[in-house]
Amino acid sequence: MDARTIVIGDIHGCYDELVALLDKVQAGASDRIIAVGDLIVKGERNREVLDFFMSDARCASVLGNHDRAILRYWRGKKKKLSEQQEDCRRELESGRERYEAYLSSLPLTLDLGAHLVVHAGVRPGVALADQSAKDLTELRTLEGKRSSPKGTPWYEVYDGAQTILFGHWPAPLVRRGARALGLDTGCVYGYELTAYIIETGEFVQVKAARPYDDPGKRLRKAKKRLAKEGDEAEG
Image (tube, rainbow, N blue to C red):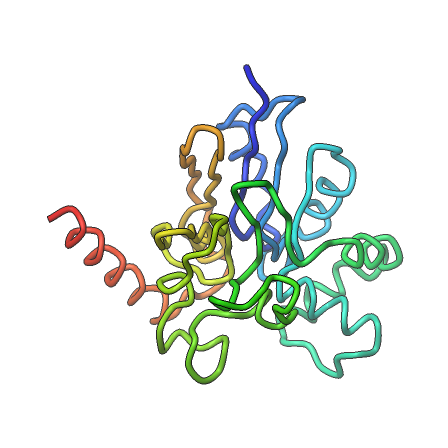
């Protein structure tokens, strides 16, 4: 089998699902395993996820907003964590030194040639070198607060040379733009963990064992909207 690039949506500490997904895609020794960030927080096995990515030479990841929040807290740059982030911090505390070193090593973007991996998004028309860390780890829409789901999704406007592979904005279906694919399919909320294989254009998914966090109304609305958009595109 030729070497493949397997890009995985937000894992959020869902280690069992990660293992099941890699087993399903039959990840081989020559494959690359790339995560879109948010390796940790909300799920129950954050240590195992980090240990796996730290120990396996096939693995790489960009920095997600939750990863970044804990890193900034450890560095004294963030005064308060959310309840879920604090739970994760306590879980990681006994290995803080090595986990902090690993998170510090994660880039905000990974250039894969025709594809670019970021956690959240990029502002259309802004050079990559000029994109802010907050946009790369938090961006959803282009009006008002960057993390708000209300407004124009950045990926509906983006038309850059590279196809962006991103996470951060959970939905039960893959988010699709002309030059972007959103791979966060809400595993931690009880939906699926998704992998996209670049060389074949194939999506592979495994079902979450259970919801680890409440998806809330936002995710349920996203499911209905994306399904409607898919029906209209097919019609």
